[in-house]
Image 1: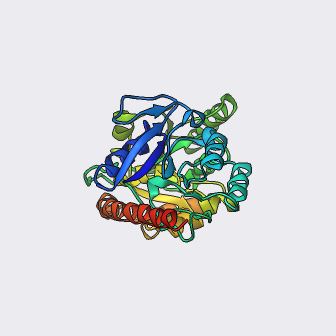
Image 2 (image 1 turned 120 degrees about the vertical axis):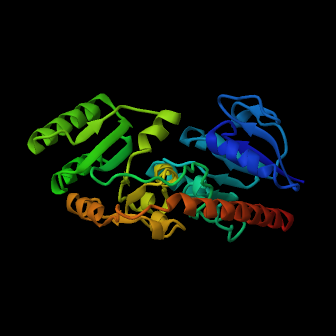
Image 3 (image 1 turned 30 degrees about the vertical axis):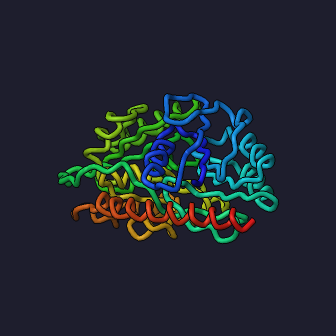
Length: 328
């Protein structure tokens, strides 16, 4: 029996992995790590420092705050650590790269986007490029009298929401922008100011801000949207490692997706199904206009197929880890 220690076990992806592991008779989650433990079929430690059991691999689906304590645990046990969280700073990524030279460490771009086979005893930091897609809603027929674009996420300069607002001035009047997100007081004030100025310039209200939504409210919000926009920094480390979870959410709700052109996104198994821009105002507007919103979006069907592939590749990844463990 191959023993898995699951960090972030009570979160969304932790739940997905727990359910998935139950389908493999040779795998067992012997314990979990979660700051907010729930009632599970295995014991849950609140911090990595509390772990006092033997395991074969540590899968991490928590958040960036646990990085240092997970690395300390890995230095102690010398067992493979698969880091599946996102949002790391350049300093964090440099630390991960450095530690991977002496520890069996594997960094994914985003485990919710899948699993690549481990090439050499988990010694390389390699982005994972496809994977589990569990937010899938039925295909939908939408009116194209009004084209609804959405941005959801952090409100700041880095994520491009202000450029999207500027791009709206280059789009036909029947295109509307619907924004969900959170940010500090300064950025939210700027957002509201720029929305007001843009709407005033257009002479109509075509950009809207709704604060934040979650769960069913979030799904209902996406139900009448045609296009989801996801922009990320063009920093090299980010472009090679990041895959925003919102892309999955958009696709799972049958939205066309406009994304920043980054290696980790373009080279993923979803790469051919997305539309890209270079993050400039002009490119954002031009790329939105290239999206065939008058055709039916089949993204949710694609996700169903990739979900099947995820299970196969998860099994292959675990088998590779087992082979490496047995060989050392």
